[in-house]
Image (cartoon, rainbow, N blue to C red; front, side, top):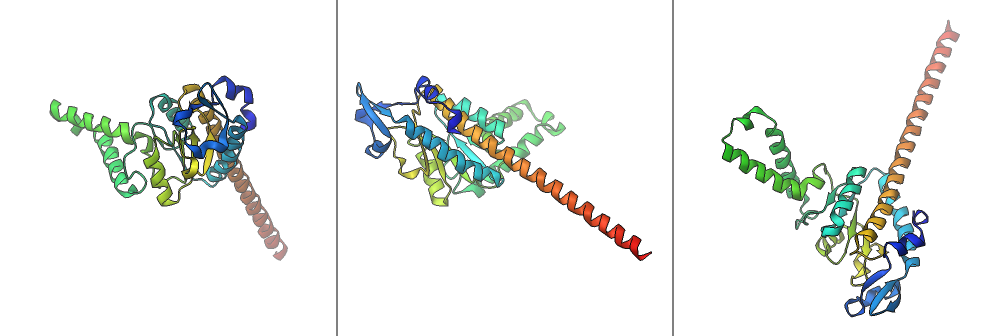
Length: 259
């Protein structure tokens, strides 16, 4: 995947700009190239390597039919993350992380059922017959739940992995993933701790262009994995059909021979 992302693109989108040296996390030292004008510069060779590593791993996950949850609640990341996740039909959280979203998934599923039944009811005649105030209250409740839970509305099971923009900000989500043994892919800036991230993609997690480039590259790897899964399933179907045809032909030949 990283081969699709060029060194020049990383430079042009400011992926290499870390935080002020005074705000660094020393654990990010292996991913830092140099310091310039009081700012740490990220080693883009490490970024490309991180992208490659993440691409291979996430392809294996989606090839097996499992889901990756996208997590990004900072303003400049929300739209691009929601857009890419929706394209891939993957769950996402871009408003706020509800404590227990992973570790207390059974309760979250109850809320999702409530949201689903609310939306169903709002399409029925009974809703139209409610008093205006009751309709407004229901609409408000629905909107509030939709805002927080809309991105995971179709989730029936826990995700197989998390993709996180700004691992420092989303530390609660990461702690929940660690508790459950769910691997974490993360855009990790120079002020963050990479230790809790299984697949580190060292990059600027504040600039929109940097976030967009890395997120799209990661989403592209998921898309490839999904296509490979579809191709494998199609081939398997054709194989079964061919085997079934051979079996029918053989049975007909045997019946013919007995006549």
